[in-house]
Image (cartoon, rainbow, N blue to C red):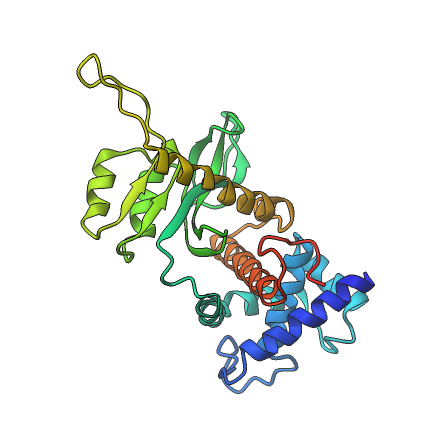
Length: 299
């Protein structure tokens, strides 16, 4: 635990630099209510939770009281923590955009996209589902099973830095997810798997001079010709393994799938906070000269 405390010392120092000059008005509180811990402290607590892969906020409160009393003299109770967490999303988005500017990813033309299931329950024909009425039933080909929940659609740079994401019901097709994800991009090359193969989608993306590259299924044009990917396209398609590594880390290290949440607002906050933590660790790794996707220790 001592090495992790040193790691968090570096992370907390970087947070202090990033939020310097930010107006912390504690907008999530009722007018006139006095606070004993700031939004900046809340951000640091969330970083501890997501970096350690802690599933429950109750467990986080106990963890902080045991190991981080020196950093956080006042630790909120479970209900206060959950309420304040949901109010921080707009502030965290400002900080995340600032981190992306420092990472200089705005003008990178190459992007990779994919989606992963965020289940809230496994499918059962004999079960009545009460939680998450906004969710839908979907199918995960990797696990070969149906589930009730959502899809996380992610867009990353060629080095694995998440830039955009969408959380949608599980029954929404990947093609529709990508349309909403890249509508504001221009002159970008997007690498995707065969689930995104759609000629109509490629034509729509060309309006903004975007190029979608997917694995081409061989088919005969005039009984003698077979259309396949070019050599350069095949080389780019090999980069898809980067986003698979990103999803693997989000699942195994950050527990983005095993969330144990009961409301959509809580799930949105958890997914966003995990991606914020992930992006911040990438930024720190690049700053100290380590591989961006190294998530074990940053010192």
